[in-house]
Image 1: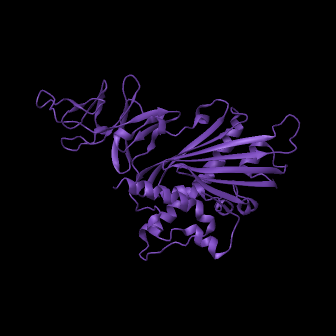
Image 2: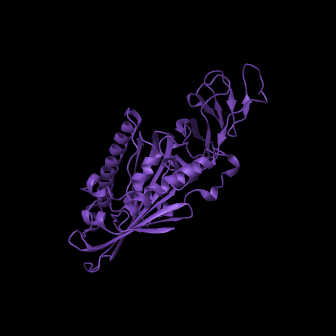
Image 3: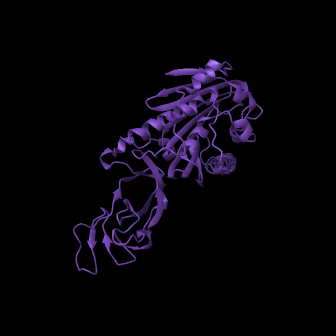
Length: 368
């Protein structure tokens, strides 16, 4: 399916964006969380020999590494008296409960119970598949037999030394559905981010939206325009007129990617004519109304320039902080306002609605 959203103003276009007209067919903050998906659990360096407690999809999990360096994800709850296992200690590869000393191997099986002198055969803790991939460790919270590592999102630029990458993270009090809709909605850029990625001309440029293999893709191009500061300043091309093109993609419930290209028709001598930026947004529901969020901004020029790193980190931290603040305000209103409201949607909202429809179908398919 493909559609062009050339800023239609007709009722038909607006209604088309809303099909189907049943509001229950779009995911929101009350939709069951999608479990059969690889989500980011932590940065690789966060998981070490000190047990780390973190909640994913409403389940408390403890993370640690074996002596060989392999990541382990285990339910953070002793099956005996519910003591949080992250409060215990590691002895070799065994996690020892800090309450009665029950010991559990990396596979979750109980290996020793001091009060009985042997391991009860029926005692074990649920473990979760977890894999290091690039800068992140990915966890599967769904059906174990569906945890195919081939499905882990592929983001090779994050490990490519020819790309310079800056990164940050947030813990946000909002739902992951709203986060996806925010990221695939570029019409808010000039208003929420006027000093970074937003320009009025960009907001009015033609947008195409399509679904491809369960993903939502939007593409946009703006010719003969000034570059946005966040891309033009580090490249030192603010005095140029450029062609700016971008692709933003709802890739999975855990991942949103964006690719920006800034082409300079008349580059200064010795300077590139094309600058590429890959933006990677990774987030994992902690609950229906809170998420763990990691972001990465990568560029294909001067990868080890500390001045560019510093500018990109400050600019993007500002932009994403503006998103975080807005999403938390919205979430607070949605959860606390006593009078229910059915939010209006218009044609430019269609990409977000397409993503929400996919998420709804995925969530409902797990309820069968």
